[in-house]
Length: 547
Image 1 (spheres, helix red, strand yellow):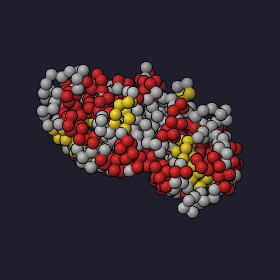
Image 2 (cartoon, helix red, strand yellow):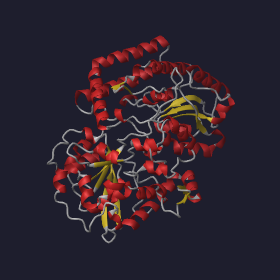
Image 3 (cartoon, rainbow, N blue to C red):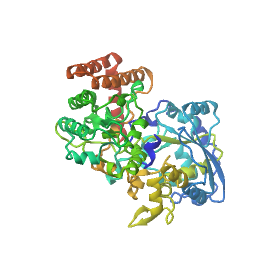
Image 4 (tube, rainbow, N blue to C red):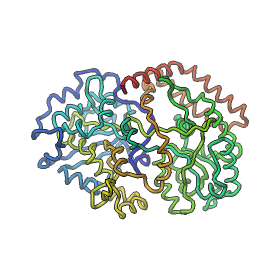
C-alpha cells in the first residue's frame, strides 16, 4: 500500500465499503453528535469564505494523529518542507503515531483516543464512527464553514453523509464525476514490456491470444537470460495471495483489460463467466505449459516480483497498481537505461475493444475522523480544512512556491533540484521534502489539474491509460461485509483464486475449462445467488444515491 500512494497521489483502488451503507447510522443520539452539542465556542467570528486557520494563528496547539498503517512513519513534525510550512501557517504541532488493526481496536475499546484517526474504510470500525467521531459538518459549522463551502468536495460529502444527516469521516483519494469530466484522473493498471526486447522482436501486437503467445516465444528464444544471468521470465503479473483469495492481476485487472463491464443495465455482471475472460485464462494456461509463466508466479510475494522487475528479469508484465512500480522502475532504469519498461496494449476481447479502467472511486481509500476525545476540536477542524483545500493540496503536493516549485503558465513545475531528488533518491525525498506523505484528505485530482505528474520512471505507463478511464461508482461497496453472505463470499474468493491457479497449471484445455466450470458451479453451494441479489440491491441504492 505504501508504494501505491505515493510516488503520486491518485490511485485507483479496489471497490470498497462506505459509511453511508453502515448499520446503526440512524441513531440521532450517537456519542459523536451528543459530544458536538457541548463544543466550546469558536475563538472568533467564523467566515465561510475565509479558512479559519488564517485567523487562528495566535492559538498554538499540539494534536496527535493516529494512522492505521505500520509502515507509515514520518521523521518528525517540521522536519520536512511540507510540515515546516504547515506549522508556519497554522502555529500547530502534530505527533503522528502509526499502528495496525490490533492497535486500533484496543484504542477504540479503551476510549482514550488521539485527536485524529485515519484508517481504511473497509474496516468494521468505520461502521462505528458515530460512537467515537465528531460530525464534521457540525465542526465545520461551528469552527470552519470554509470546509464545506470551498475545501471539501460536495459529491464526496454527499456520498459519506449518513442517514442522520452527518458526515463523520472524510476520504482520501475520493474521485468524483466532476473530476472525470475535468480530466483530472489517472489510471492505475498497465501492461508493460521491456522496450529493448519488444523492439527487437518487431513490436508485435500482444492484444490477441495468438499475438501474445507468439511474442512470448520470440522473447524467450532471443533473450534467454537477463543481465545478471538469471533466466528471463517471458510473462509475469501482480502477485497472487492464494490463501487469502487475492487474485493479483488475473481477476478484475484482466477483466478491465478485456473491457468486460462489472455491471450491465443496473445489474451485477458475472465477469468470471464471460467467454472472453475464460479464453484469456486458457491463453495463460498455454503460456504456463510452454514455460513462459514460471511457478514463481504462484509463490513469490509482490515485493519480490517487483524487485525482479527492477532487475529487468521479465519481458512482459500485467500489473494492477502502476504507481506501486515507481521505485522499482527507477531502480531498473538506473541499472540499465536501455532496458526501460513501457506500456503497450495488452489483452483485449475478441472484438478488439479498447480496455476500460477506473480512474478512481468516489469512496476513495481511507477515512479520517476527528474523535470525541480531542481537546482541540477547532484546531483539528482547521487542520482538516487546510489539508483538504486547494491551498493545502498545493503545499502537500508541490511544497513551497519559489523553493520546491514554480508556477509556469498556470501549472506547477517542480524545481530542478526537487525533480532530480524525487527521481533519484525517493527515501531522502520523503524524509527531507515530504511531498506526497500527507495524503489523508488532500484533493489529489486538483493536484493533477495543477500539473502533478507521475515520476518519470512510470509517466509513460500512466499516460497510456489516460483515454481509457470511466467511473464505476454504481459498483462501489456492493459486497456483503457481515453475516453468512460475507463468510460465503470469502470462501468463494478463496476457491476462485485456487481455481485460477489450477486452471493455469492444467495440462490440457479440457482439464482447465472443467476446473473453471466446477468452480462456477460450486459457487451455488456457497450462496452465490444470495450474494448476487445483495450486490444488485446495493447497485440500485448507489444509482439512487448518485442522482
